[in-house]
Length: 437
Image 1 (cartoon, one colour):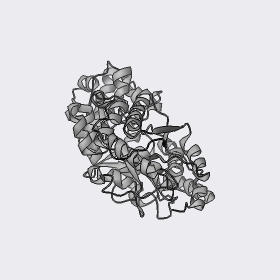
Image 2: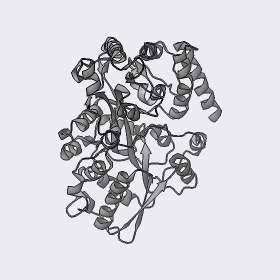
Image 3: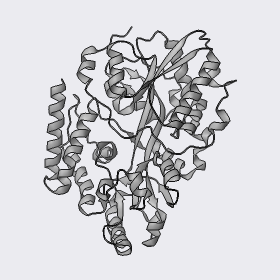
Image 4: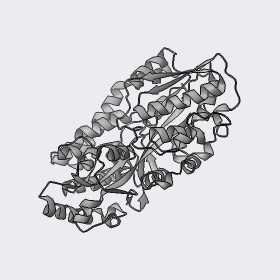
């Protein structure tokens, strides 16, 4: 039996997951109806009679659609294996789950957010999973890599969300543009957005509608900042934000802000990109597939299109946010936990979960079975999975991101240079990392 690395665990207990609605995805396809309630001949009815036994599955709470999806998987598994599945719903996942790990009472299998995997993966609390047994070759390699460390792969992805470019068709048309005119490369964005902003100001009044929104968050900016092989952490997990390449990439972002063509939702007096876009206050945004349902349900009058994220320095990027299932190393029901993971991450399981919860499947064959390409929005987001960088930054992602967010506004206001902003963020993050140790 694997020994839990308790010192690493206790040091890291103050770490919390970065925000981001990483699993909240709007919209769903209709394919769930064809599989919901069916277990005969399915992956759920694979070998294993677990009569009279109970499997505990650790999850966090979700919306009504996510609740319906997990409950359908639960019912199918119970019917196929003659057992009970107990869903342990954490309201403050990292705090409560870490307490269970300390008390050695963690669920048999549980969610692991991709951003937190480096931390949980370093504790020795999860079993290494066999690639062949879990059909890892069927999953997108970058998502499997997000749950792999020096020991091996410790989690199987259950879903993924990606960023794509959303544009307001009517606002662009009022300025003489279509979605095809939006450049495919960030290198050409400045000229386009500058002209777009000028035309929006002329048509609707100065500062009434923004050309484009952006987020002051490493979970959104990481793919640009890391371009060129720049790492934002060292081998010990400390922040390295002040290298020449990172500073230059950060300056690229700030140039758009300083030119007035990138604005945060809060600059517009609104809470998040979906609200800013849905209320017609911005022409272009980069957002996750979770916004799709919001636009359809809450802002149905908005005429919008979706296209791939632009390339940067010749490389196509998106960010992705993934969650996986791991098996507790001290579980007494590892056979049940293994069967559960194999089912819920199978093509059938992914169809039920993703179609109901409104997320993207982490494996190409499931995407094909769900016919995601029949919906132009899902098609773009699914294509972005292949080139996406999973949101992950070592064991201290939350500390580093918080420091980054703290000082970003000072660079925007001109109170700090780009170099000073990143140095201050690095100093704060590394001091907190040292204090935690």
